[in-house]
Image (cartoon, rainbow, N blue to C red; front, side):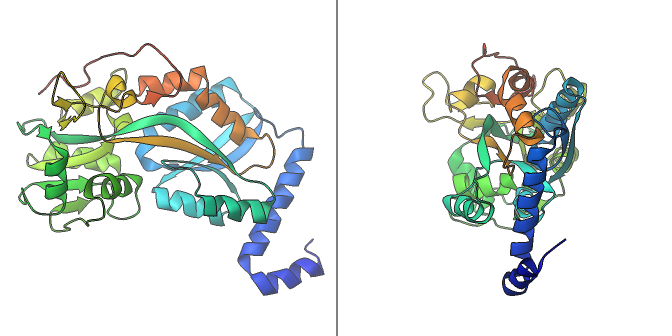
Amino acid sequence: MINKDILRHWKRYGVGFLMTWFCISACDQAKKDPMYSLKNGTIHISVDESFRPVIEEQIKVFERSFPGAKILAEYKTEANCFKDFFSDTANRMIIVTRGLTDEEDRYYKDSLNYSPRWNTLAYDAITILVNSKSSDTLFTMERLKAQLSGKMNRDQKVVFDGLNATSTVRFVLDSILKGEQFDTSVVKAVKSSQDVISYVSSNENAVGFVGISWIGNPEDTAQVNMLNKVKIAYVSCSVCPDSPYVKPMQASILTRRYPLVRGLYYVVKEGYDGVGMGFSNFMRNERGQLIFKRAYLGTIMDFEIRNVKINKKL
């Protein structure tokens, strides 16, 4: 029951205080409950939609390995993942493309008396897709910037999984446009990475941006079928002595020869060793890293790097 002191603080500080109080109470209860541990319990998490295929596989293997653990995942834009993390007391974990800022970390340390834990899980490549009939498969960074800002190839539609709240859009704005804005007359927003692939496969004069986990796994029948409808384009490499253009492969991701690389992170809001940290540890250790490796992400654990062709059409 909420006492008078809590009600007084509620009137003064509003929703933020009540959320913090509930979160601290839940953590205290979980610490005392033997049913909550690294391998037992239920957790609600929010996941950046651009990593849905590989995280679904991680959850499936983790829950099969630890039947006492249940992970309830929602897939959405990165901005909405952080919104859940800050405003939803039930959400204790997000999987996104950045860690916490210093300001965000201080907020949680002040309000919860502990800092959320976060770290790198793997490395992703923003992949450029063109239609299977297209012969336009070479892109320089200069061309990408000019095309996204509407200064060239205006007849070619560029497709994203949204225009303002997704991690892919944020990465392109920061790493390619570098402060400039999209020309919205040449850039099209669809609802998801799957829709990006579908649009490019149906429109010969389209270019799409997706994470490598959607089309990089040569052992996934659905992804192989997708690659029969689209091509993975090459991007210019400024540090490659043997070739001026490179595709996103594990070797080029880990060496950063492919220029469009970003990190994948977990952020866990547990003041105890709960299933959120158990799942994070699983993904950072061998079995989880092998799943990332099969999805063609760059791993944080050293493995033999495969140079497998993930698209036969050039």
